[in-house]
Amino acid sequence: MSIVERRRHARYRCEVSVEVQAAGELIACKGVLADICRGGCYVSMVAPFPSGTSVSISVGLPQFSGILRGQTVTSVPGSGMGIEFTSGEDAEMAERLQALLFSLENGVAAS
Image 1 (cartoon, rainbow, N blue to C red):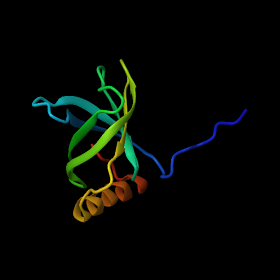
Image 2: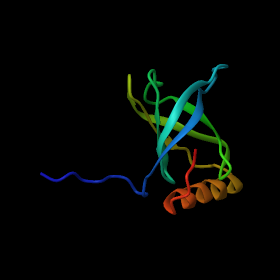
Image 3: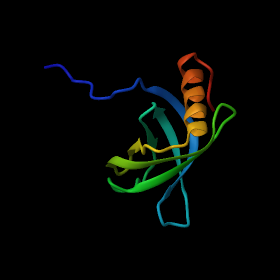
């Protein structure tokens, strides 16, 4: 039996400290960005937000600095959460995200 890949975009593994904040909450939780693609990312954290939660992810790297917005689509307590980026990110943010993905694709360390 073969596994069918449902992702539309290539994923890039990374290990980047991020802060994730649920919509309407004042406090952000720390996590580690484990992989990322044009459509979303996976954030490792012990107590992930439930599926369906709207979140903001703060990333601060030389290749990309800003906030990504999305919605959790998977949540595994003790492991982390899969987040699908919401459409409607501004063009400048999309460009910077593409630059980050390009640097990861070409082996530039993102730490």
